[in-house]
Length: 169
Image (cartoon, rainbow, N blue to C red):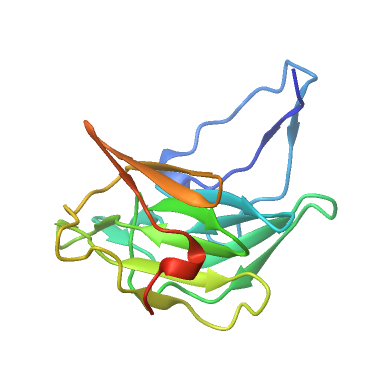
């Protein structure tokens, strides 16, 4: 079994002290913005944390994004998503991170937009024109990249996104 690391990202209102009794669990750097409901994905040697939500009397979705350098144990900010979202599905597509769906607090809206960030340029997120007319808004869906195609699990339905070359901009 691999090494287990823990990163704190939950707002302090809900933080629970953790006793490190198991020596295989080590504490790592905290996220820059404490939050829950983030999407995580590994791309080009960095872990990307997308969106999330905080509770300050009421729930609020965030558009912030960060990347984690495992070797240096450091989080750094990357451009914010175009749309604030929690429970977003994060997937790798080539050398890009794709943010799929999500949930917007406090409006209570399930989101349909797909956004993409090139991890080489890290300039800004772009909205993708991918099946938005037939995509059922989802939050908390799962996704994985297999053979450069993204498989999205949405309840009892599975969708496969086209490869990076086939996505319309």
